[in-house]
Structures are given as C-alpha cells and as structure tokens.
Image (cartoon, rainbow, N blue to C red; front, top):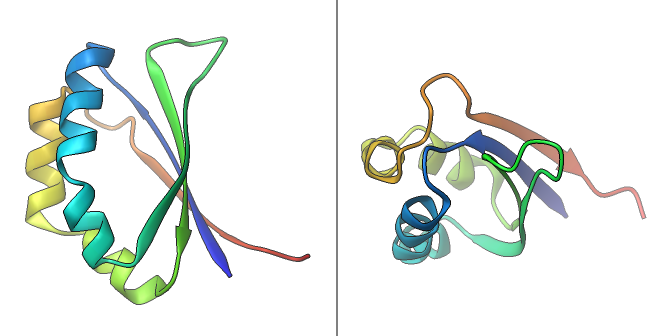
Length: 91
C-alpha cells in the first residue's frame, strides 16, 4: 500500500477546506482515499494531509491535472508551498 503526504500553505483555512472538500470526487476517481487532514501546530497556515493511494500512476496524473491546479488557485494555496511525498508502507 502506498500513501501520499501533502503539505501546503493557504491564505484562509475555511476557503482552503471548502475547495478541498469540493474536489473529493476527483480524488476518488484517482483512487485516493483520505486518511487525515490536519494543520501544522507550529504553522497553522499549513495543511498536512495524508491519503491512501490505490494506484500511484493515477495519483500522479491527478497531481499534475489542470483541475487540481485550478482548485489550488481557488483555495488560496500559496504558490510554491505545495509539497507531495509518496510513502511506501513497511508494516
């Protein structure tokens, strides 16, 4: 099983969360299941999100999609703050 860890800064959490929730169907199509949404305790303007990934290639395609870029703009994601790390479960 693979996981995808996302970190991104935002201007306004409520706006970010509304857009994040609105693209759930896109993530579902990409085989991504939400595991955790959190905020960095040291930097509350940063979201840290974990997904379980059924198909790494589909998740990569989603990460590069114009729809996701548009969602980031609408959500107020700070440009250059988006970090994605693919994790392999070991146990």
